[in-house]
Image 1 (tube, rainbow, N blue to C red):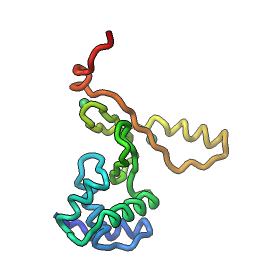
Image 2: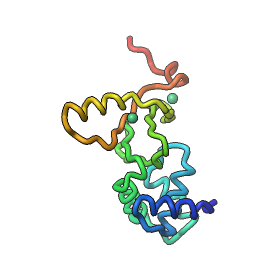
Image 3: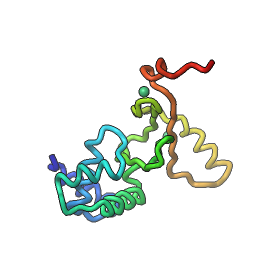
Image 4: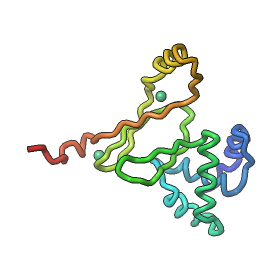
Length: 148
Ligand SMILES: [Zn+2]
Ligand SMILES: [Zn+2]
């Protein structure tokens, strides 16, 4: 399944990173993951394609990707673990269900005009922001125990 390496080579270069087999592999796995993945999830999958890879290598690459702004690093409320996803080409936010851990993408960004206002009033140059919304999806909403 790791055939997209050529594309990632360019992608890594654009972000000032050298393309390596393990970086390409991790990008492929992040790309394939339909939702946020933990370092352990990625390690488990990476191991099947490259059994020389170690968990600390995964962490190192993820930190590097995070520093280069290629991925989003978030912590789900109830879990202490950090989760990662490939940054979409288009800027996006998420609704995260606390019941089933489903993650719904929101294409609309409500903060764009707010950012401009902030930049104007604070003289701060904003390059990015994070916004995740937590709650319960339609299915889980019906299963929340009612307060008595
Ligand atoms: Zn749910
Ligand atoms: Zn936004």
